[in-house]
Image (cartoon, rainbow, N blue to C red; front, side, top):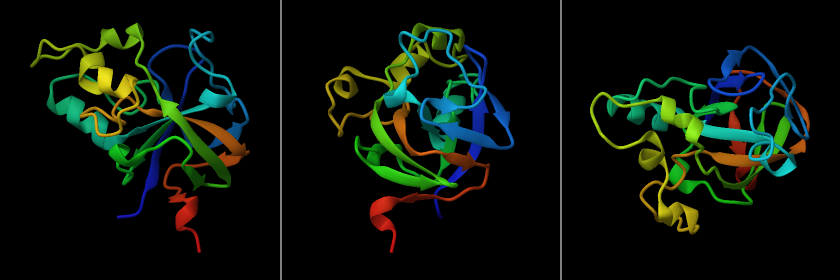
Length: 169
């Protein structure tokens, strides 16, 4: 299965982000996207947040009422294993190029999503002290999402293939 963009999500600030049909990506993020807490989110090194649909689906299984965009991601992906995401990886997505910068540390705003099946917070299901220390073998590595910088501006649409640059011919 090839890696693809399932959803492009934006909001004027806060959660959830809602899907759009075409995203115009500039150096500081998608046109029309904003952050409720710009001191924490956004900026060139955090212009885009990626989360795998596989993470969303696992949270749903645990009883969390989430959906694509609920976690604040701009790109909901499929076919990219978040356990393999690393800072510095570069990807072609649509007509853009992005570079992963670092895992996202989940904020308190995600606390609105409570599970009907577990007493753990959603933050504890997607992030751990090991991830915070940069341990790529930590159980929750990549589950909280990964920030990316924009290397080449352009457009992204749902269904666009995501190709790791090192895998290009």
